[in-house]
Length: 137
Image (tube, rainbow, N blue to C red; front, side, top):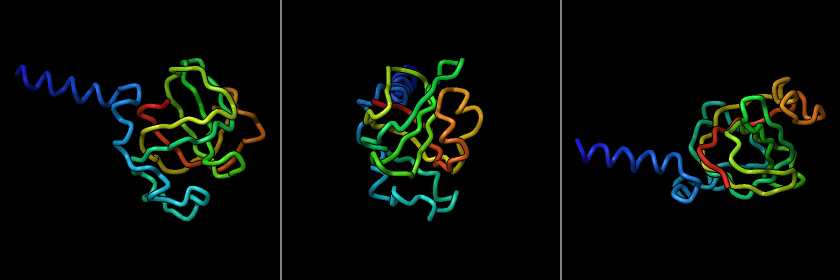
């Protein structure tokens, strides 16, 4: 029983780390996808665990639950967007580069909830790739 608890603690420690333990656990998205044109992939292809390295924060907001709604792009001028809703762990700002570990979660659009959280209405109805983050830094 003791070994199982130690193993579980190790697994949980990796899953919920600040990103240090997960730094290289998922492949960089750019090695598997053309991040400038994600529309070429089907929803069933957009379910893989990947890391987003040094993506730009295009816009962001925070909801009443304390979660960030972060609109990301692979480059400053890209109009290919990724949307992440994640726990607010540190202060972020528009234009900042961040790296994340997590899983692609299909497609969506910027909806009323994201706009209400603080994402600019200029992005309303924009198509996005959804991303579920395990950690970011």
